[in-house]
Length: 224
Image (cartoon, rainbow, N blue to C red; front, side, top):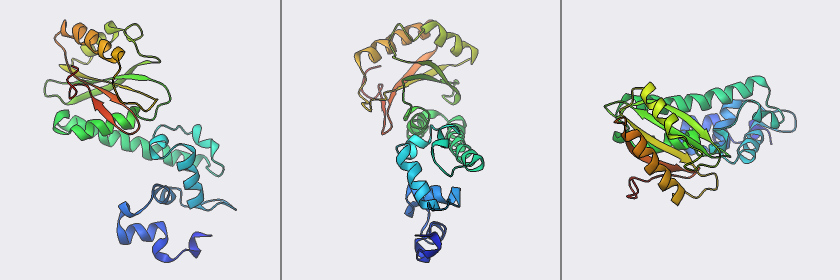
């Protein structure tokens, strides 16, 4: 069915204007960005294919313009628009965290980390460097691969903390398996980094284990 053949209140643009963005599905919101389909595949079908191919909006957040070439009908302009919108979402959350202490907005921290790490196919270890007011200075992805005490180098974390003149840090890494429960190795790594950073007077405030569905705080679990 062509979009023009849908009832007017079922078309994405009209539906958004009359009922608000929350009334639209992920595919319908994407359809508003893409605007048009190709012969044999209308824009809603193309949008649903995007959602299905990349495992939902969470997966889309970590796609590149190159990844999007897998979808027939997505030319350079459409790919660039999608990547730009997703990058704007990341920057908006980063700006929010830089504007006020991160623990004044705990959900924003979780949202930001899920946006950055939640859908990655491999393990990433990242650090949020914070100033003396607990506002975000920067997030850096420092290590990739199976995370253990031997694969994450405390010296490098300390060097980056000093380079940013950080007063404290929040550690984070993802579990691509989808299990948010911290492992024994996660607990041991946290204590190693806490001791190393403590030598230069940088506090470890928390360590989040991130999946596509949630970001679990080790501090809240009493593991810090």
